[in-house]
Length: 287
Image (cartoon, rainbow, N blue to C red):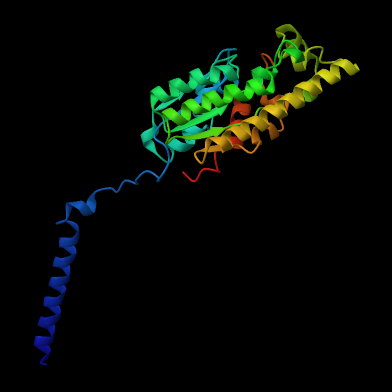
């Protein structure tokens, strides 16, 4: 091929390459649009929390009030890595679709009413933490019996199963109140708060006593909580494949005084709420 024709062919090829490059970029408006990441598959778009003052966030703010924005389950505050905020990071559709139906002072017999509210809200994910108030009675003899506790839990879960057959449910164990007594009994400030507020009298009345009767009372409360946890686990298993038990993880949290508020030295503070969230975020769910 003569040299001049060789140069002509190379020039034509260069022009064609530039034309193709320009067509792929400037001529195609779709190529310049930012790509949005779709929500992670399976993460719920709505949720609700059922339970008592622990889940309501009592004492986790600067006042001794319910503070659901710090709840381990549904808290939206940036300082708590709640279930809601962890799910939100994966599925933006849950934003604002979160409900905290937990009632301070609630016992297991109030679970069904809370479950009804969750059904009405048509949520896709429900957390349940109940039982501390059934154990924290005025005396050990006044604690909710194990059969009554189980019957109340079954009523609540049955309402969820009927009304929200496709929802996932997480059932959480009860904190170890015997451990809380052990870590606080020698602190004068803690003892004053427990006595003044008559906090969980079945376990924390006369907290410095070493008398045999006092220790027998505390062990009775400890054993009752263990029995409640056993019933919660069995009730969740009976519920079916859409219910998950936390495996006793909340009960196993090694609560120290730095995890409870300084109002009553009983309810979790913000750090304690984060500890609950970390212990319970459902790795047992594949979402």
